[in-house]
Image (cartoon, rainbow, N blue to C red):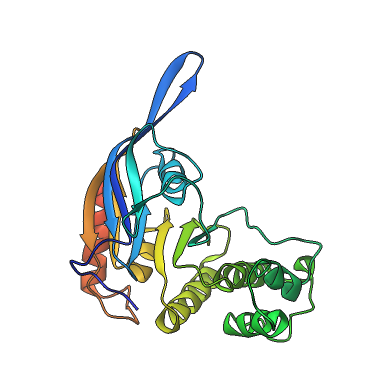
Length: 254
């Protein structure tokens, strides 16, 4: 599932800067960020609220353009969003007027698939929604909605999953279940993942590396490898030691 080698980076962010104008004042938000994500690697971004995490992700995904620096995907400069990558956010992107199956089929529009229904049902099954294909979003629980969101992203087989606090609205138990579901899927299907989270344990549970971002204007403040094999025991002394180290970088005494 995961690689961490010296091969050319899948995502290569080089000295990226971004500022926003506010009442004739330029407000720096991202200040010279350099980071690389290998093909198939899962990297978590964690930092204080308002530090610029979402702005940085939007720059990497192509929804914003940097003032300085550049973002390269597979060695090619990113200048706009691409079907190579799909963003899963807190807000969600499921259409309430379409069934689960119709939402997944909508993602296949423009793709030359003959059996869109079969493909949609396959991904519904992968995320544990078999039997709910004809249900509408209002008939689903919060956890089921997140599963549908995940399936809608995966159905188009993106090379990169951009995830902006995708599980923040879920309770702890449901969040753990969905994270385990994601790990199971990533073990079967190859994706490069860049995820924003406020949850240090979530980052340790999922990621190959954790990048701690500084307060705004954000920079990469610290990098931690997560060398534990899956499934991971978050209660292990090694995991707890890493948790304390990350929290210290965030200015929190654990």
